[in-house]
Amino acid sequence: MKDNRNLVSIVMPVYREGAHIVSILEQARDAVESSGMAHEFVLVDDGSPDDTWRILSEISSNFPNLAAVRLSRNFGKEAALCAGIEMARGDAVIVMDADGQHPISLIPEMIRQWVDSGAAIVEGVKASRGKETTLNRVGARLFYSTWTRLSGFDLTAASDFKLLDRRAVEAYLQMDERSVFFRGMTAWLGFERKQIPFEVAGRAGGKSTWSIFRLFRLALTGITAFSALPLQLVTLAGFLFLLFALLFGAQTLYVLIEGHAVSGFATIIFLLLIIGSALMISLGIIGEYVARIYEEVKGRPRFVVSESIQSRKKQGTLSRAE
Ligand code: UDP
Ligand code: MG
Image 1 (cartoon, rainbow, N blue to C red):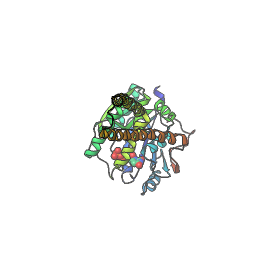
Image 2: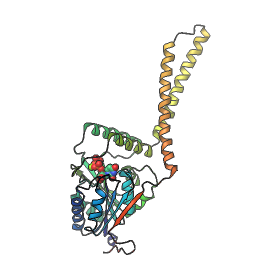
Image 3: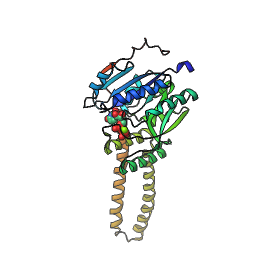
Image 4: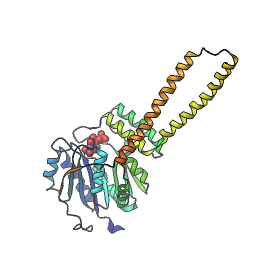
């Protein structure tokens, strides 16, 4: 097995990170080389509106093992990650953010654990969540506790900083869905895994481009892609209402037979309101899943590449043993 472990790919989604990308690449290269592995970089410019792509094209000659693609527009980090993982050829693929928040100093340790233990996935887990707003913190906590309950996988401390070996990469690539959620999907994969805790550092520059709305969409994707429980809750609510219906029905019939019906106006309004909103919410939940199905059956590509540059050797001429 040992001789199959030579090339480590570093995959980074890059969105408006031109200002600090060079120093991050240099540090990452040194980190991989210090563990005696060959490296390649796979960078995916997720349709940055600024000069990120120009900078990537310029530096490609300084990095002899670099492949970069530019997506035709901003497809989002998850899609960019897929693009990168598809292109990576390494025996292990390290996925990390390009903003310096994933400590490069942990790369040698990740590689060491992968080589020593043979684990298919070595994942960085957040020892603390770093600096973030209260809203983000509360939102994340709410999402993860719901997610864990619904899907059965605990992602509370999970991050997108991971090393996947070839087996895990191939398995990941077989997952064909449009709505991708890297953290959840790698958890679903199983395999033996090792964990390395890390502190989330501050960004090297720029600012995070995730709005609350985008995070909310990601959370919805994460939940609907991994659990059908919300749909089953609709059925459960239906049964609860049926129970009420039977009780009230019997009571209504009884009152009718007794001969003193009428009254109970408030009850009727109240029931109408409750049932009305329950129906609306249920339709909404079903709609959310229908939307996902629609997205999946359209079968559109996850991303579209507009340009690519390559300073690494063409496939075929690549020898893993280098
Ligand atoms: N990113 C991306 N597309 C986007 C937004 C972000 O590829 O639309 C990349 C970004 O360049 C970085 C990583 O995803 O490498 C994490 O982004 P960010 O730092 O904005 O997110 P946060 O650290 O706040 O989760
Ligand atoms: Mg970040």
